[in-house]
Every structure is written in structure tokens, then in C-alpha cells.
Image 1 (cartoon, helix red, strand yellow):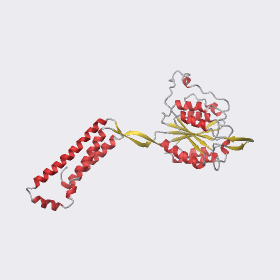
Image 2 (cartoon, rainbow, N blue to C red; image 1 turned 180 degrees about the vertical axis):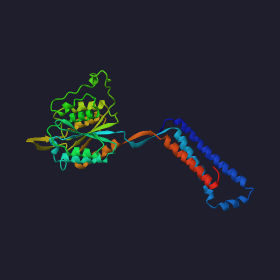
Image 3 (cartoon, helix red, strand yellow; image 1 turned 135 degrees about the vertical axis):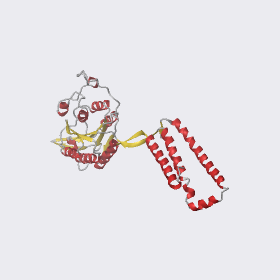
Image 4 (cartoon, helix red, strand yellow; image 1 turned 45 degrees about the vertical axis):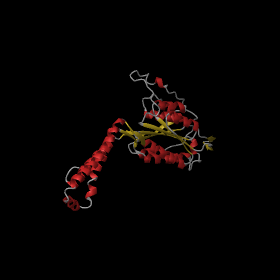
Length: 348
């Protein structure tokens, strides 16, 4: 724990002085009682509990004062608080390689089941959008709080040719930032796509302010989770797309599903070996200040989504707890006064 005003902690030295003052008053009161033997009869009438009871209110008062003095120093503590994340975009690979069975029952089904479990565990205030990408990228579901609509969108996936991982990221960004200058038509088509350089965004419309990149990972209102099992075969360079995300502060968490050695599969008359491009996925996550996860089994994939759920809905923050300590201190002092009045008919 750290303090914004640590010099005020010197006030805690008052506490031992108060303890010494209290002991001195007790000794003085005891000495004053010696000439009056009748006081012993009064103590006997009050019962055996009276001896320890008289020390409880001063002790509570002292603890309350200590809490108030610490609160005055404005302590900071690292607490787990609800995340400010409001929107999560799931960018999911639906290329033909997702039919591989090295992840049981197959990669696509395992990914769908894990994604649906992830959505069900999210708080209702978090909006989720779904992007499906193969050779092209499409927005399968606009960001919504309706878990039912999201589950339907995930169940409707159909396998396609090609793997355009960069397009998946760009479509997710276009959903989060509609005015970012991203050509949605090109993302959804098979033609080559050109996005304007970062410094050109905003020049076409003089009324708009020029775009200014922010620190990677600094945008706390949204995040992208990209799940893929293969290497990019078409579309935008994923590292270029990652740079777009980084300059807007959006984290892109990447999940590689399948085995590193890959598997030989057949799809629409084609035979291919599908491998994980872990180097690129790691680079995308690193560039956007996020993380890469590898899921070689369906159980691994579920654990990855559980981890992401905890990362995106709860975050550790250094928070000032002065108000909590002040409230605790005031409550202790009121309790001390109330007990003193109840037991002895006076305040301390």
C-alpha cells in the first residue's frame, strides 16, 4: 500500500501518547478510590464483567482514530474492480482448415462451443459482436447484449476457402470505429483491399480532426479476440491490421487453435496441410499490448476463454481507499460512544 500524503502518517504517533494518557488516568482514578473503601462494594454490585467492559469503548475509539489518521494520508490499494470494457469483438476463423479433427470433435465445433460458453459467462452489460473470416470477412452479428442473438450467429458459421486474418481484424476495427476510413466493401469481397495510411485518415474531410495515434492498449472500452488455426493466405497483412488496432489503443488477443505440426485435410477437392502461424499471432498480440494463447485441445480452448473472461471483465486498479477507512473509523468511534452510553451512562 502506498500513500499520496505519507507525511501525515506522523500523526499516528499521537496514538501511543493517548494510550499512556489513558493508563495514567486509570492509575489516578485507582489512587483516588483508596480513601473510599465503599467503592469496592459498588464494583462487586456491578458484576464481574464490569472490569473488562470499561476498556472496550476506549479501545474501539483508539482503533477508529487510527483508521481516520491513516485515511488522512490518502492510501492507495490495488483492488479487483469491474472492468470498463463495454464491447468485445470475437473474430473467428471459418476457413476450411477448421474442419481438422486434431481438436475434438473438430476445430470449428470446439471453437463454437468455447465461444458460446465464454459469452454465457460474460456480464449482461458487456456488448459482444461477432466477425467471421475466411477468404473474406463478414460481420456476423453487430455488438449486442443479447446472448441469444450471439449464439445464433455462432451456430450459423459455414466453412469457406482462404484465410484472411488481417481482414478479420480490420472488420472488427471497422465495427468499433465506423469513421476510421476502413473500406468495408473491400473487406467483404475478394478484391485486394487498400486502407488509407494512418496519417491520411481525416484529410478527406477538412471538418474532421486529423487522427492522432494513442498508446497501444490504452483504449479501455473495447477489445478484440481473434481465433484462428491457419496461416494467412489472402487479404490484408495481419501486422498492418494490428498496427491500426495499436494506434487506436485496441488490444487484439490472439488464440491459436490446433497443433503446431498441423494436419493434412481435404476440402472441396483440395488437399492441404494446415499449420499454426504462431509467430504472426504472437506479433499481433505483442504489437497491440495483448496476449497470445495456444489451444491444442478443446479443454485448452475452454480454459483460454475462461482466462480471457476474467481478464476482460475484472481488472486490478490502484484505487484510493481513504473513504473506506474514514467510514470504518467513524463507525468504530460511534460504536465506542454507543457502548459507553449503554453500559455506563456516559460517553467514554
